[in-house]
Structure formats: structure tokens, C-alpha cells
Image (cartoon, each protein chain N blue to C red):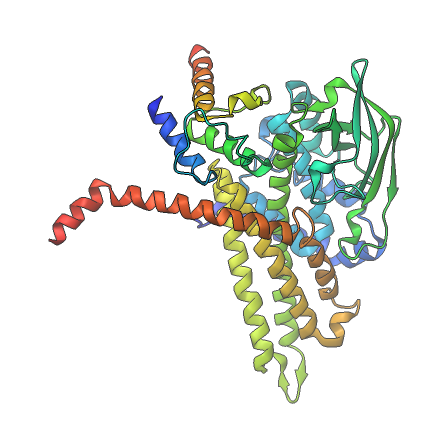
Length: 83
Length: 401
């Protein structure tokens, strides 16, 4: 999980112009979310963590922070393992 | 990044070029004058699986990789930008359904889109809404298990003949995407004639007047139209247009070389005059650069790399500007002949101008790419830092001591 947080933070650092991004900081509140960022974020999560973002996953709460995204990845992987 | 084409890609390229030059290019002037594509050409294109080309074979598509798909758009675009734009808008809708559609959406539409039985169009632009999509004025009001759409869409490519529209509407104040069949009561279309370019793209105004669609026609989540469905469609559309621009540049180079090789002034062929050579050089170099940028975007798309989003923006921005420059120089090289109907360069010029406006105007591209430049610097710095810390680098540094 720590590794996932590091990778997510590295990705977000390209968009969020601060070196002090905390795990629970709301990235939507920062104003960086637009349609391009959403597409890039989805693409990053799908490739980096080998998962597929489905229509039903599109809840802002799944992507609002590093912690939220890590939890989302965990749930997706659990579904994949469970079959 | 390996950008050498495979033998299958080269075979496909050759086939696309042969088809486009034989079946489309010779009649493109006629399509432009008559402001329509003949139905039999659309059927022929569909029969060759040039519509929905990237759809998986399981859905009846050709399952093209992104480079092959780009080459298709390049060759059709070289022959006729209007014909290429049919592929663009149809595939934008197919791609959005593949990525974000429910199983019912996929079952109902994908094989029909792959076969061309259903022609699709992208209905987002409005009289007052172009770049600023979040200000969409068409509304979708929820009522008794259905949605009522009201509003007007304008500049809808192939709106005159599309059977299915991907529509962006404001639902409870949030941008939301819907699939709307042509035969829904309350949907009407009016042809738009006299366009500057892509005149045969059969554009239309699409009006929704108390047009009721069932709940299941909503695609993607309510309120997420501009965060998922529409940008997915636009991402493919932008890529298709970028390659179409490469086709325009290619046609300009070929036309200009042929003309300069045959026309004499002041006792010499035009190709021997240095200022003509200068223009030929510019379009030749820009052709190669535009194609490389498109290839890069395509490779990243095939790899599922999120960088493809911005690299596609860059490819389209460069290719559309280069197409406009090439077409302008092609007309200049042809002189007065370039202004007449006998030579195709005047059509390339008019079509190229449209490419600088659609699928993200140049000005919007400039704003977005400027923001991306920071992201790229951060990403590259991080990537290089990881290599400078690697064991391999350390070992080689030790060897040199």
C-alpha cells in the first residue's frame, strides 16, 4: 500500500504544484480536476495498477485523495482476486 | 519507442492508399461541389470495415491497432477530408460506447456500428457553445423513468444522415451524455450548406423539442459526461483528425511536386526556383514531423499510457497548423491555378482551415499544452533521476574512475 501511495503521489505531483501533498488532501478542492486530468488519472490508474475503471466506479469519493485512490485500488484488486 | 511499422501495418497502408486513391480521390471534387457523400461510398467503406475500425473483432470490428487506424485516417484524409470525417465522428461514438456503455448499450449498438448498419454522429456543439462545453444549454429533464431533451445542436458532422447521436445535455445542472436515435419523436435535423471546408460532411443542425428518451439511453454516470464519455470520444476524434491532417499535408506535397515538375516559368521548371524549393522543403519536413508526432500518440494509445491524452493534443495541434501551412503554400505554388476548381489544392486549403477549429481549436490547444509543459518537465526530471540512481549508472561511473 505504501508503494501505491508513492506512485500515486509521483503522478499527482505533475499536476499539483506543491511538494507538500498529504495523503488525505482533497485534490478536487485544489481545482486541478478538469476533463483532461480525469482522463489522464483514469489512464494512469488503469495502466499502473492493471485495473479497469468501470462506469460504476465513477464516484468522486474514489479519486478525491491519495488515500481514497489507494482504497479504490485495493477494492478493485480484491474483486479481481475473488473472481 | 519503436516506430518502425510492422509488415502488416505497411500492407494495410498500401491497401488504404490504393482504395482511397481509386475510390475516393477521383470523386472528391464532385463530393465537395455537391456537398454530400454518395450512399454507395458509405456502404463500400462500411463493407471494408473502415467504420468502427478499432472496435474489437468480437463486436464485428476490424480490431485495428492505433497506428493502422491512423494510417487509414491519413489515406482517406489525403483523398477527401469529408469522407475521413465520417470515420471520425462515427468512431468517436463507437469508442465512447465501448469504453463507457452498459452491457445493454454494447449489445444494442456495437455490432451495428461496426457493420455500418447504424451511422453515428457526435452532437455536442451548439449555437452558443463551442469550446466551453460545460456551459451546454441543451437540457435533459428527468420524468417518469425517462428524460426529456430540449435544445439545439449545430455543426453536427453527418447530422443529415446519422441514425444515432451521442448528445451532451445539462441534466440537473450537470453535463450528462445520452444516446438518441434519429427516429425519436421530437428530434429534427436541418442541413447546413455552404461550409468553408469539408463541404461534403453533410453537417446539420439537430433540434430536440420535447424529445423523450428512456432512462437506459443515458450513457455513463449522470453529471460525468465531461469527465468520461465526451472526453473519451474527443480523444479518438482528435487522433483521427491529426492523422487526417497528415493526409492533407501529404496530398499538398504530392500535388506541389507534380506541379513544380511540370510547370515552366522564366525558362525553368518551378522546382528549380529556390523560393519554390523553400516551400517544398517546409511542407516535406512538416509532413515527417506531423507523422512522427501522430505515431508517438498512437504508440502511447496502444500501450494504454496516460501520456497519450496530451501527446494527441500535441499531434493534432502541430498537424493542423502544418496542414494549413502546406495547403497555403500548395495554392501559392500553383498560382492562379491554385485558386480554380481544376486543381484540388484549393479544396485542401479550405479543408485545412476547418482542422484548426474542430476537435479543439488551436487557441484551446495552446492553453492546454502550455499547462502540460510543466507536467512534462516534472515527469522527465523524475524519470531521469531514477536512472541516475540505478545500479547500472553507478557501475559505469565506477568503471570510469
